Length: 126
Image 1 (spheres, rainbow, N blue to C red):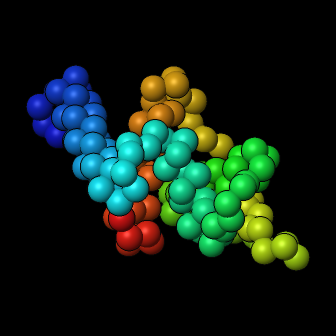
Image 2 (image 1 turned 90 degrees about the vertical axis):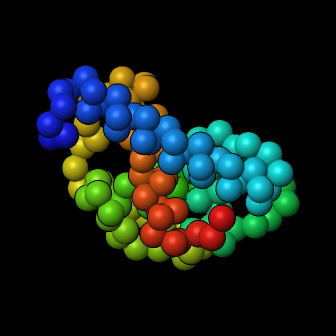
């Protein structure tokens, strides 16, 4: 509770999320020369987690890397747990609890917040 009122609290929280997101985007633009969208950032996290830096990556592999990223960023919040790595080194996650029902905008903000937490934990230097 922020003590002001639910609409103001939500707006303040969303403004803070948006500002933190813009700050991350700015750091990524400095590093990579262009502004990435959420999917590109998830792909980047997946590549980082897998240490997978090949030139030509198949669409299915890109999707797998993004899945690794989503599971990785949601693990600290108790949604996923790493079960094992297969013979090729790919992680396999177990879903521990269902994701909350959310609108598309809420889903995007939920993922953005977890991406920001991932970067704040110094798992990846931007």
